[in-house]
Length: 145
Image (cartoon, rainbow, N blue to C red; front, side):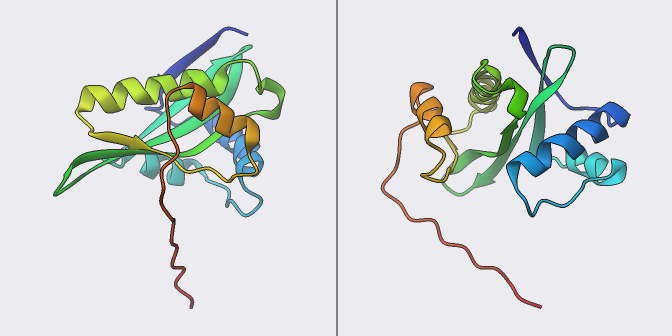
């Protein structure tokens, strides 16, 4: 499959449909993003939304988040999802390579991502693309109502 990656700049019905189809493949608890929510997301200064097209439709997406902190500009990859029908065809690699270029060009000192250990195929891809595991723990606080 020939894959192209582009920055999401306009939200139309194709984009809404793509996120409706892709987000449940990422997380069973992901909430639907309507046109307004997607517009707010792409307007966020810290976030670059990448979409991958292949076979005439959007087959993947990735969020690249960049932020300045005292130790320098940092970047994170979040919410990578590739359509079930397009997995193993280079979509994830194309999205990640574009994220690496954009983070480097922006001057980010590092580009991080996290992945569950059970996602063996994804973890192999990340390592093949030069990401290395770190000795670290991820902590999460979830505020309750």
